[in-house]
Amino acid sequence: MNARAHAIKVGLRRGWTEFKLSLRAPDDLTFYLLWGGGLLVFLYLNRDRVVEETSLSISVLGLPGVLAAMVVFGAVIGPGFGLVVEREDGTLLRAKAAPHGLEGYVAGQVALQCLGILPMLVVILLPSAFFLDGMMSRGAPGWLAVAGILLFGLIALLPAGFIIGSLARKPAHVSTWGLLPVIGLAAISGIFTPIAMLWGWVQVVAQVFPMYWLGHALRWAFLPDEAAALELGGQWNLLGAFAVIAAWGAVGLALTPRILSRMARRESGSAVEARKAERMQRIG
Image (cartoon, rainbow, N blue to C red):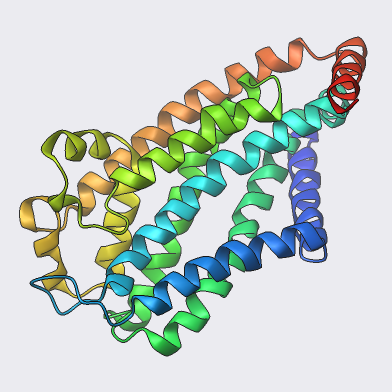
């Protein structure tokens, strides 16, 4: 096994280990239960509210968008915060010192973020299956499609999280550059309201970003064919959805290695100590 393959294998093992530790961490469990439980309550309370001119409830129609927002949030915020924190504590510097260490680090983060979405899916989807009628109209093939779409979207958008984490100097910057835009996109991407009901310029802006298209592809997987009437143009556009998501992934993959390498070149023991001293001053 060559050095690169070994580094990636070690990184994947590290991601698996961190995921198992997160399942026992009180903070992470609280996050899963609080946010997943909150979304579940919303879905339950709106299970009987039918969207006008359809037979679909707000919950059934909104569930795919909720999952899309969850994927975008996890892909952007997870690695973004991870990079900033582990740059401050010296983890990234140690990875830089090992042969192909940065590649192994990225592999570990990809594994961690892909696994990290599973608890939220369990918290949201399993209970929903008992009280949402018509949640999955395509049967087993639909569930396979959902799994593929979620994985494709997550991997395509993880580079955006790495870029934000590489550019941010402190955790607060990740919130500013990552969290706030994600919240803004959630408001205009047709998660809880069909996008066709929003203003025309909002529809145009939403189509530039992947959250709407992830929701669109997931709605195709979850909902019956007649639900296409609520989409822009009154039909499914899976080719457009995959094209936009793949384009974001391709641009991110092209930029991420350069930005990570540039960031790694600036890492040194003195830089880590300076950031620790700055953090202590903020705490003090």
